[in-house]
Image (tube, rainbow, N blue to C red; front, side, top):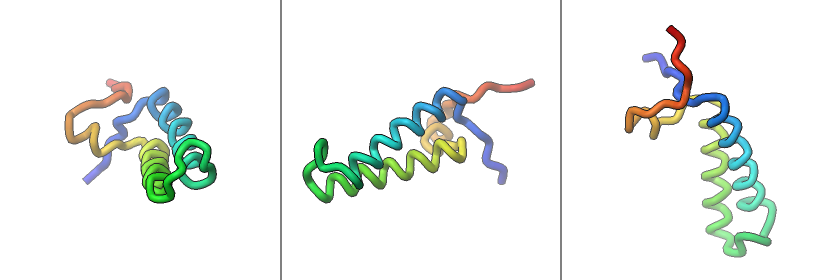
Length: 73
């Protein structure tokens, strides 16, 4: 089974930036999220989103049949 890239460049760049913020505020800063458990959850979601951005494949997009990647003919 081949996993087809379904994330476009802009989507991947935005996800990387948002993920970096989630990881920072989740694991390293207590200024935004003061609860330890909520920070941990936010950080884990940030790491997962970063992996999705780096791989270029989003399982949720696949599930709903959506793609931001350009199709080459």
